[in-house]
Image (cartoon, rainbow, N blue to C red; front, top):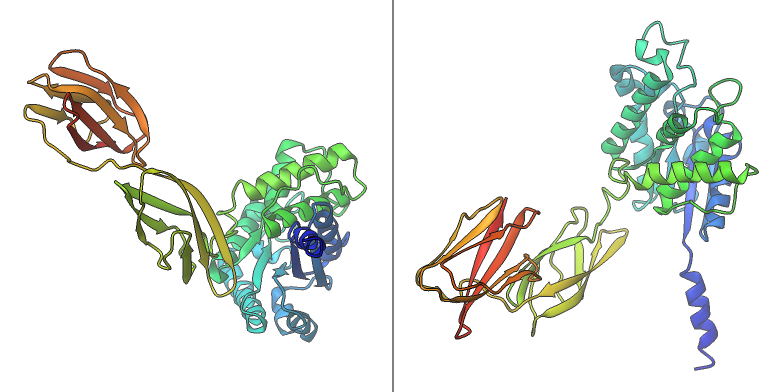
Length: 411
């Protein structure tokens, strides 16, 4: 045992942080303030690390990058986990018809180049921000660009469309800028040209990228890029909430295996169904390799069920506590008993002409008891329906222990 302990400690250390290989392809919005280096330092302070490279000639577009041998060689130089693509700051904000011809085809070409090198690399689009006072040079020909808000909205729309077209993640840096400005417009995120980022702007971008790549919070990160601690904490909160509160919006995890699952119990059996669309293999802790297996438990109780969903490149794991009850449906019928309305919205009415019922129990769909009533001797009982819509189980018992179980639908 003593000989294996150091190895065990090493394995615990290795698994305590994540390492990602990331390539940044862009222009000055990537190069100014060394954004890749800032992301590296934020990750390191959070217990993770990135191995990174970058290529960011000033003013470069996707069109130029798509045929640039230097960009292509960078892409082909490693089996990257992520390749970040940043378009020239104005182009994605142009009219939709122009973006469709000047931006999208080259975004698709770069994405194809990335996957030709390594099918498992994930493309990440770097959503940039609107200029502080809009794009005045293009304002006369396209009015939405006359203001920061109009330019920002067009950038958001275009980058999300690129994410949809290529099934890629989007790092919502522009939305982090927007949220920061809305919360505190006195914090300067721009340089004096009202376009390029200040150190605070680049730090906000770096925190946004960390949450995008690792799906983790940056709140409390010790690395501040030289900013005042209160400013850094503010920007960490903005970036974290922008990304993690809206993962689906930014396509983060949307096109990847998702091991979340639902289950429908029926007595000791349960039907399990994965929520994962982008997966081709499945494992369940009770056995089974299909997306929707059924399983019969030996007894009722609470059981921990784990599901692993994988595609050709990655896996996701989800564990839930599953409640199994031995309650069946329609085990007996009581003469003279009726239950209405069903479906119901407000109340459940039970009539018992022979005064046979001695106990009423209401369970949720997972078999958990939520209400128990011992009725007095009368023919009509009214119980409040649960507040949440769904399927419930009503169990009635008589003095001999005979039970009748009914399925109740609450709308």
